[in-house]
Amino acid sequence: MGMTIAEKILARQSGRELVRPGDLVVANVETCVLLDTHFNRHAGWRWPTRLHDPDKVVLVADHIVMSANPEAAIGLRTMRQAARHYGIRRVHDAGANQGISHQVIADMGYALPGTVLANPDSHTVSAGAFNCVARGLGRPELLQILCTGKTWYLVAPTVRYELVGELPDGVTAKDAFLYLAGRWGSHENQSIEFGGPAQAGLSLNARRTLSTMCAEVSAEFATWGPDDRLLAHMRATTDRPFFPTYPDADAQYVEVRTIDLSKLEPYVSGIDGVIHNTSPLADFRDKVRLDQCVVGSCANGTLDDLAAVAQIVQGRQIAPWVRFIVTPGSQAIYREAARLGLLSTIAQSGALVTVSACGACAAQDFGTLAPDEVCLTSTTRNYKGRMGAAQAKIHMASPATVAASAITGYITHPRDLPALESAMGAAQ
Image (cartoon, rainbow, N blue to C red; front, side):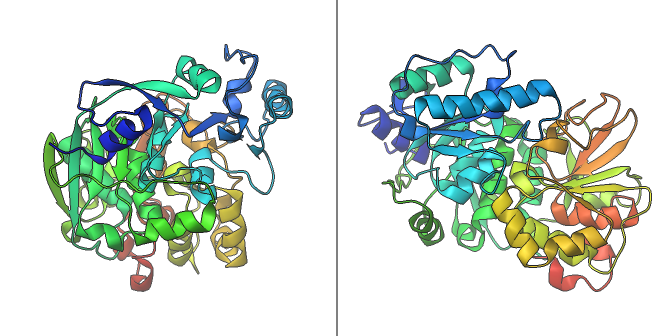
């Protein structure tokens, strides 16, 4: 019996010929990412005397990069001191190469096909789009990695999603995830593997959106197979060795499910979670008045997403009672969006373009909701209290839907805005 992508990577990195669901493996970790929040004096973090390999460590300021208080500033200073002390060279502090960690990983080619990547953030499954085994880990596991270069994993069974068809205009990878979450719900103690003939038509940004959002259905890993698009990206962004890994033809899956992208439509989540809690946008159209709209985060702060927002809001104004926050995923994306004029278009509509940070998604430095306010977001998470007050109501949708809704002030189908047909496919 053959192995899935995740199983083959874990087998290679643990020196085994074969692994099966239920096996406990100790695997080599190629990339260990630590965030600014690790250096908060209340984090309980203790650094080892020395690092196993400083060249495999990446430091990223993304949660508290704005230094909203002295304690945050002290934490960021401690991160900089640690980088100098241990000789860590891959540091993404405030400045030209900063961004949300998962976007930085994508920009810089840090997620190497066929390897293992660790990061304390729960949306680390994002890196699975690069044919990499990646998930969020706790502090004890991260300390083990820093000291030994290894950590343990319990091999989970895998659900395979065969993607067929082509996304219609106005429908994006975010809608595909919301459909998946609503229909199949939790994948706790399971990994997800994406593939199928539709993969070739999906950008790396779209694939990463799907992988990132799999954290919201509790997937262990969310991997994709390598193809020409991925391999070209890796050759352009890294000179480190990588190992393209394909599933075996006779790989064993819990279930193989098919998603016909051509039959999807825009989806919106209910409040307080996405598991078995999403519906076609038609169920919400014009029924939900909004106070705030957000596009960004590690899932949907890509250049594709910003282009879609700019095309939708161009020549229009945000509803006067709506705050529209747009967050580029990294400073590299910010600069390119500025060069293309996307940020100017977005700002002229009345939207607020922010620094590349977790910010509104996690109520860190901006975008915090007051009690009973209603938000439509394309960020990663909408559980109760995620973006501020526990009494706030958070719905999730694609960047295209969020942008259209920011214009009207109500949850709105992008096609309900006239003369936007050319913009609808931009965020796929």
